[in-house]
Amino acid sequence: MSSPVSIPESVSLAIHALAKLAASNGEYVVLSDLLLRPGSANHLSKVLQKLTRAGIVTSKRGHGGGFSLAVHPSDIRLMDVWIALEGTFVTSICPFMWHGCKLPTCLFGTVIEDASNLVRKYFTDHTVADLGRLFEGK
Image 1 (tube, rainbow, N blue to C red):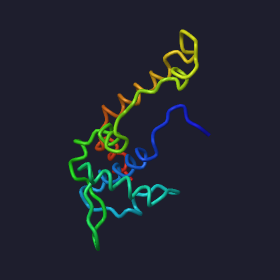
Image 2: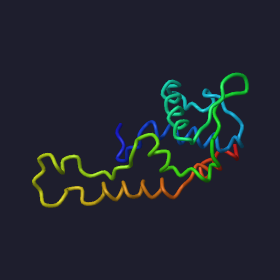
Image 3: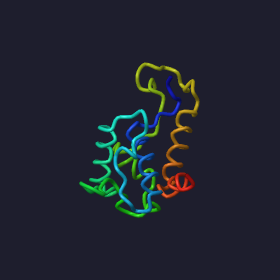
């Protein structure tokens, strides 16, 4: 089933993992504890490697190792995560706008652009700390 709003899988994996890391109070968390089930450990590992290169996450090998946040969770906007993984945030438009549609006004009105702007605002206004609080009560 498709979704009317599409968030890249890499961003979804990252947001969930970062929320868990924020709730871990600076302790290292192993990859398997950050993985959503069912999910690909390889994909999450690649996502966390990108976040490490971006300076958002740090990793430590061996006993007591895993992943931890490299900066305070309140300093990581969700949009920073999106951009680190996807390169940019592009506002969605009708996929046929430039490919054959001859209508002067889009059949979907502004709903696609409005949804993109809503997602942009949420990802800009919220931090990893905001989401980490959701895990602290568990």
